[in-house]
Length: 421
Image (tube, rainbow, N blue to C red; front, side, top):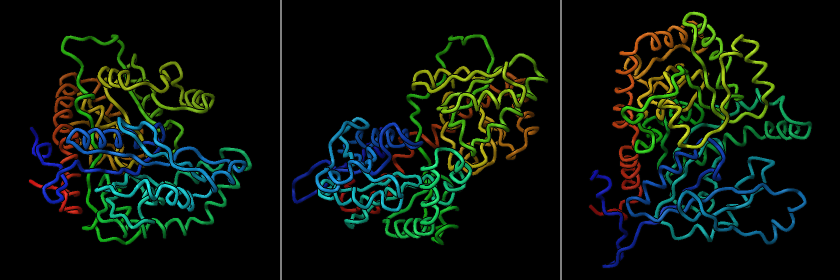
């Protein structure tokens, strides 16, 4: 058994012992890109004997419901990540105040926990804990400044009312940045999912770099596994891209440009796109624009089992982003023994070992990406060697046990009275 799993997770009060209670502030189930992180952490903590309670913002409150919400609405208990979570409705229109009322409503429900863990992007989920003075550990996937770079590009989307709200949110942007800085400084420990995110935290809020620990996102290496021996795929060679296709950070144009170059050189090869898509016409336009419509299949959103199968059967997984905090899809693919090609856009530099588990190429360089893809497709032996090295690297660096042990070490330092060897 792993050393972390054999640690006695008991709270001592005289001679009595009880299970450590962990409260995790996170995104609502089914939303955002940190779902697998929350799921994996909850699974790990429950596996070593902790009681885990997620708390999250649930449904946004309409103006029509506002009076009853302010006067009588209370947190509710809902199943979440294999446990019972605390769901709190919220006022969604102005980000600065999203957690103000919910934190007050949930205050009594959040008392009495031993560990307070925040998993957040730009949602400032520390708000649940900071108002009551709880001592919390902050695990940060992105900063507000990085998130805004995308939101400004997306400002043209939505109706007139949503644009008006976007303007209002920009007005309070400085206030949000200052609040983020205060919440980070209040944290008992700040962790970033990559060196890139750590540097953005330091840059935006002038925190000492040594005060921000890098702990990567965990991968369930028991779920993301290589294909069973002897199983053959559909026989059709394909490349795979998984992500939010319409997000400008994903830089789909670079991917399609590089794929078109590879296809012209090597002939029969297809590209499969997996992920949410609100505007199918937009994707069709992009495929026509880059002249690859006859070689690309949009698969849509898929379940875990189908995602694993696609990872296993793909010749390579591609990521063409301009910015990534980590690049979890890369680690998941590598766990399935599939090599990857990714841009040097922040997080992937912590995930991919260039030339060993895949290739890293410059951002906005379709020629370099096409060359790396072609090298993989043209050398079966290289692809197999990289796949095996990729699986080994993920198991060694990003497995639940490895990352979980690092989180437990943080807990041991922040809450030393809870853990006995």
